[in-house]
Length: 340
Image (cartoon, rainbow, N blue to C red; front, side, top):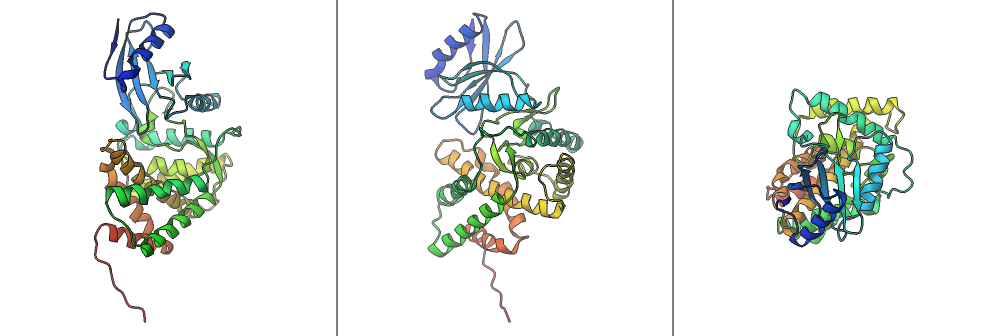
């Protein structure tokens, strides 16, 4: 008997069912909807087997590259990173059968009393990822890609979500700021970057942490995954805590000779500018998910991102025009000053 609960695309029912019966050799199973992510993927837990539960990743090839997922999984696993094992693969149809890392994400588990330990585990794993040397087949998270991402802030957040069209001078000012952010980010040393190393994609398990959603890994700025971890899309921490955890990461990175600045203050500035790029981009992505893809719940975290952006922009003189643009977008009165 096969039970399938709320499959993502009804047209794939028969395809999934036939393939699973083939690779599971006719065992009865129940397929339970686990979650969708922000992309075009769905995950299902397979139970009622004689063995441990498994996870099906349904990743239609029109929108996903399951070969890339498998390649990155093998690269990480061969370097001691805890990622799901690929049990069976159907590259033609975009189906992967994975080992099950459980349900307990960092996002669910993180509390004030366990944050130090969980983040210690996470940064130990991150440093191990960043020391991987054989990255010749990975793409680059470069200026061109960052520029494309930052354009989402205007195209989807400002114009679609806020329904605002900037005037020419303001548009030029915003573009100058975005160019400055990209320049600062790409000037940083590069390592292997997960590109979504956040509590939602880390699992609490025996070999902590289990790491998910790594298929977009590339070579990019060393601060990107650090700021993704500590300035998360779905949970916020006091700045004192973020600085403390970042120092602990930085000390680990220095011990294994990763290319971080010898001055922590310089490293933290790099991290703040990198976070600015990520948070502006994600506002655009979450707006696109709402207006194009019908996934409206992500944009509810808009205030968190605006807080991240403002906190950084107010610390650097070069970013003052960004604060002015944010005030304009939020309808705040413009401050008028005099210079003598």
